[in-house]
Amino acid sequence: MSSLASSNKVVRPVNTDGSPLYPDYMPFYDPLEKVDDKGPFEHDDPGHRADPAKPNLLKDATKIFDMSPWVGTELHGVQISKLSSEGLDELALMAAERGCLVFRDQDFADIGFEAQKKIVSHFGPLHIHGWAPHPVNGPVEHMIIYDHKDDLRVRKSWAGKSPIQFHSDQSPEPQTPGTSFICMLESPSGAGGDTIISSSVRAFERLSPLFRKRLEGLWAVHSNWEGAMTEVNNNGQNAVQRRPVLQNTHPVVIQHPVTKQKALYVNPVYTKRIVGFQQEESEYLLKFLFDHIVRGQDFQCRVRYEPGTVLVWDQRITTHSQTLDYPVGERRHAFRLTPIANKPIPSKVDEDDERCVKKWQGM
Ligand SMILES: [Fe+2]
Image (cartoon, rainbow, N blue to C red; front, side, top):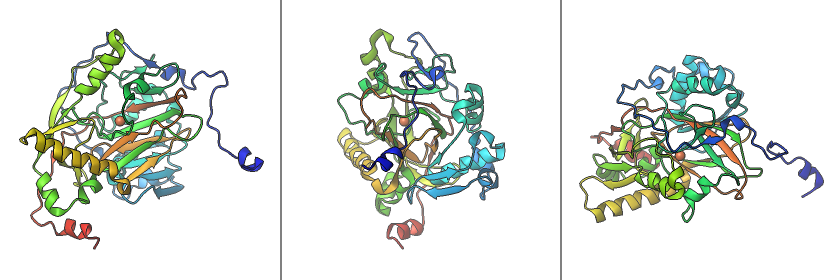
């Protein structure tokens, strides 16, 4: 590499003494902490109220481009913290249309816990994780993502298996997450630590019409038992067990409440079996669907984080995976805020599948 190229290389900011850039967001694990489950509630999706032209969201945008044909749009010039209520409604709609939105150069990490919660609460009541940490002096709703040589809980939880595990966060909840946020605080020094997002709308559409019809009407069991057990096995008396283990049954094909798009709603982390199938039949079908999601590089995009990046995505119509591809010991520090939305809505089998057939055949 020439000296010019070398001097132009972007270096992500770090503290020279090795301390975290955002100490207030350091993870806190309290094995005694307990939180009550939220009861059922009526979800009114903000996307219903949005102007489809999105004038409030996009009025300051300087650059907008799609990251891949089927999922992901990157926006520059839009400051989430300055959006009006109407702008946030439009953000919900655009996330539902594109699966995920990547906002650059945000001040979101610096506006404080309460302002962050207020913005994301626009999309629904905030989820509280069963065992993941929250900030040392911050709200329980802020889920901290932290990996560093001084705290290898994340690495330990993925030891012995591929870190590529596509999932929709918290799909075992009775009402599942919707328009969710990840705010990056500190990235590894080089490339890596990205998030891969996969379109569940396209994953469904790309199956043949006959196969799609077979999937519609099926239901599947989702459980977070394995994750809860890993937390206990890895951390013993220091394990966090904030909430009881969750198990719920959801449609295999759902419909987005606003766009009405159909999406495949199974994932390799939480979906355990198809209701009414024999065990072998269920394993056979789920293995095919999981492989279909993992292999679907033609309906995925990859989110690379830079200082100030905020990822907003709709959990109902996407799955995602970490990459965990950067050197062990480097710091990756972020927080997630996860609004709960509607109970997954079963799709209806189309009487006239002509539109789907045409799309499938590329017409
Ligand atoms: Fe996740």
